[in-house]
Length: 192
Image 1 (cartoon, one colour):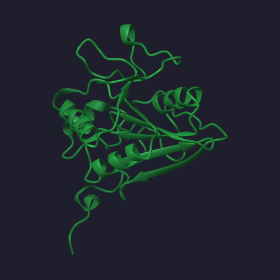
Image 2: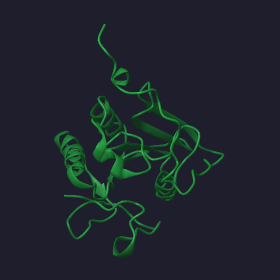
Image 3: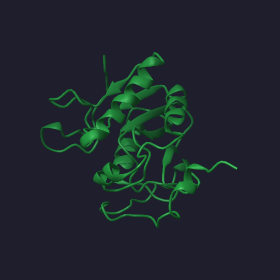
């Protein structure tokens, strides 16, 4: 019998909130679903629904502490932006599906992307009315995974949007600081 993706790793780790200032509470009106690998090492998709209507697909860097039980600062801010824009919910996918609050740990991982990640990215994007690429600059060799995610989406002919671009032409992350700071009043623009 072939090994599953999780058979290759140690038992699932306890939730790691070490790099997360604090998991945040989910708003009372939000229903949540999530797709994790069986060992919960990779989170492939996180869906928040608060009203009927269309979805925003956020294409970010990697899952932090958000799950079906709690949110985190990034997912919460994306939700506030999505609500303000009039959407009924959001789907969050990531260039790297490995769950970690410390993005540098991804550099040590054998497979930071996860075996099912590209399929979930494509499915989530196809179900959304708006796709916002906001992965920020990934550390070291991981940037190629963000480039691969963007290529995957562009090959499907999907219109991609950004919150802004860094001086290097990289889509800014919702929690970007300094000159790249993203206000909650932002309106995503098409990324040509």
